[in-house]
Length: 249
Image 1 (cartoon, rainbow, N blue to C red):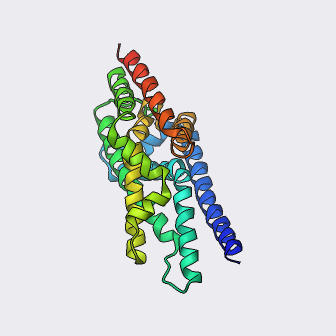
Image 2 (image 1 turned 90 degrees about the vertical axis):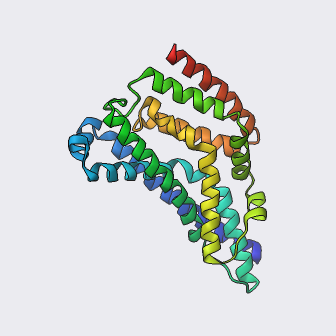
Image 3 (image 1 turned 60 degrees about the vertical axis):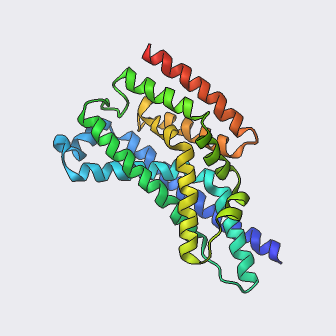
């Protein structure tokens, strides 16, 4: 009976996550269909209006939901399974939405930071109207930095937390709704620590380049979920360093 209830709960949670991700991707695609120069003109009059920054924050937040939430699904489903077991045992349990909200809050902080950086890059004319780097030095530097980071211990430590949901909960479990929110934020923080430079690579080929967005999201998913994800990430790091050096030279 427990197994049937668990499968039903996980199916509902998975459907909810996939539905949210699908909506985010639809929104990303629609944003990309609007000519970027028209969007910028409408939202960034004089490059000093507050509505423009709010638009950038919203854009980055939706992209982070689309790109990062799928890779967090194993951890979210494990939290749902633990919550179901606790409910059946008559123990306090927290809705999985609380943990998921904490995860998304961490990426919202990153999205806000990325929007602020993009605002400054536009102000200094370092981004093209397509929201891509207008400077080979900047684009190459981002690629080299992201490639080197793939080999750093901090990257490995954060990636291991993302790849091992059971290990994460064994070390980070907290009781109550507040604890679930904090756990979600901490898991999100590990994911940010793992992928923040990969997300910054959106500037290289254009923030609204859907194929580039899909490619980065697919790589993140493979790095976190495939058995050889850590090795794949290091190999990709070499490619990124080579690509960045070529751009700079």
